[in-house]
Amino acid sequence: MAGLYVHVPFCAQACSYCDFHFTTRLDGRNRMVDAIVAEIKASMPAWSGHTFRTLYFGGGTPSILGAEAIGRIAETAFQSADWALEEWTVEANPEDLDAAGLKSLKDIGVTRLSVGIQSFDPVVLEWMRRIHSAETAESSIHRAAELGFEHISLDLMYGLPVGPENRWHSDLQRALALPADHLSCYILTAEPRTLYGHQLDKGQLTAPPDEQVVQEYQELCTATEAAGFEHYEVSNFARAGGRSRHNSAYWDGTPYLGVGPGAHSFNTPKRWWNARSNAAFLRASEQGNFGDQQSFELLSNADRFNEALITGLRRTEGVNPSALLEETGQDLLTQEGLEALIADGDCEWHQGRLRIPEPRWPMGDAITLKLMC
Ligand code: SF4
Image (cartoon, rainbow, N blue to C red; front, top):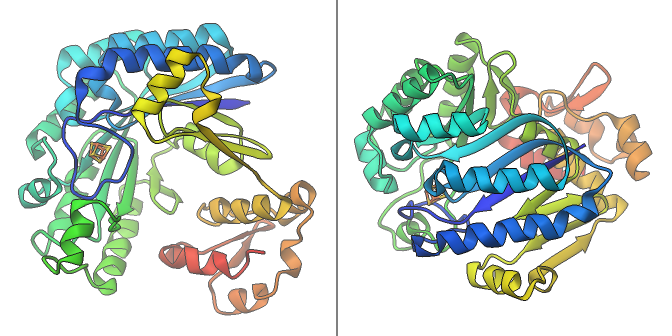
């Protein structure tokens, strides 16, 4: 079993908080598609014996490529490897999802859209430097559902330093009224080299207080539960059958190949990644050697144990200590601090697996750190 991730490093505009790898210079799109196609062809022979089940176009803004280029990349992947396709996701921004664009994505076989909405509030959208309006976002989701997309995910953000007081309540209500079966809700973090990071450094903005973030998280949990969503991972909520299979496979330790500049790949015990540079990636493609711009690391048993905790404890299923012991030789049950975490309510046993209770997920990183080796 395996997944394929395709990184599309283009965006129409740089959002104020984003440190993903992308460029707003769109003139290199055709060359980039050629290079990604070349990397798939060069990489797939090493993946013979794997059956790919999920395909995910992320970015950047994959929808900016249009369905023809996305279809060309996918077709190359389908012809170069063994597939039993269960899910094909394309990340999209609302402004790219007009009727013709949506129909083309449906026609090539895309099964799931992940739409970057972030907020419906005009003040917030302007501060974020998003291109779409609330109305564009809402109409694009209705249109996608009418055109037959069964799986639609919305990205939203909370813990913001701007916007009216009831902004999160209002955003949640508007999102939950849309025909989407999945929500990804992230706490905004200030990354260096972003406009938001710069505004904090210069004192032009103040980060929201912890109480605001906790209160918004609690409202998120309550509102999504009332609307019939399952909170299956710290940032992810799904209606029945709506969990992201591709992302769930990451958290399960399923091998995945990532192609495109900055994309990461994993096949235990090795992790490797392309340089975050479009120029280096295009040069590698011209030279027919993608390896020179890649870096890699070999994960020790302790690394794999720690990663399993980081990904597993963020999920409602938690981690299975016996499976972890078998895979990594590390015994979670003898980790110092486990008893205290359980006594304090930071961890709990559920059906033989250890997990962090939902109300404590926002503190999950600090809790997980206490169990890592
Ligand atoms: S948030 Fe999305 S659309 Fe905005 S700059 Fe980052 S990748 Fe591009």
